[in-house]
Image (cartoon, rainbow over all chains, first blue to last red; front, side):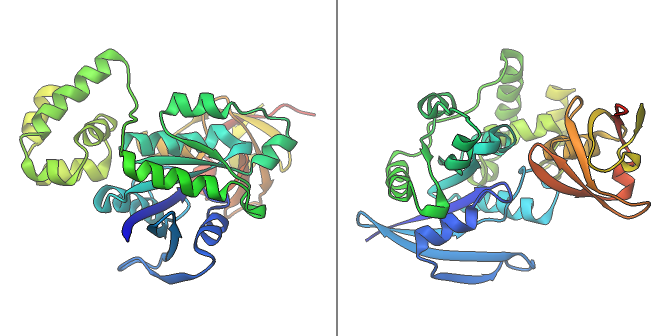
Length: 232
Length: 77
């Protein structure tokens, strides 16, 4: 049977664990992330002849390396490259939640967005243009209500679909920033080890942001000198 | 009236006017939702120790040091 790896991610309190339990039937292997006292939950789900290994990542607001939870989530997505990343978003609090979504797009994750708590959003009289949101983000968006298991089949369908399709969405920035990303990317691409391990565009964006963890990596690789010439 | 978030009264909507910190702190707080112009509400606070703050629909605990670096505008009732 075809096996795929699926990671669940989202802000704290979006119903991530509930979706995890709905998908896996509550049968989970619980352990710790290696060397860290942060819980790691793993479960399985078979859908349309595909075996999904589902990994529950810690709830985070962003993917900066600011806390251990964020670092685990980010390293997992960067280094393990799961086939699909399900970003669970609180439909009643879209503005806050979409920040993480954009960071995941920058990371070039193969994204499916679950628009959870759709019932609460409706109760607040929010009308979300699901199709429009999906077009803007360039990834599938599935409305769900995890508490009553609404949208779970559709979510599984979308995951299997996405695993076949691969990544195609990306965030584009202003022209001058794009040029800078390109210039930095050219330098990074000279390092084959980097190409193998990281999305180059993502590294370039993080360098522009001055991300500590990425800067350390660049220093280790001895690319700092050349980079300075581009970023000044 | 302007004051640090650490001195703002509980249960009152106040508006962030400034974060007095370095790049790292400003960035981290903006990721948590503490952006200039954002309305926030102190849920639980005391004379010392951390306080619980509501921002963009989430409750976030902040330490005293950070609370004193977030400057808010508080309108008297």
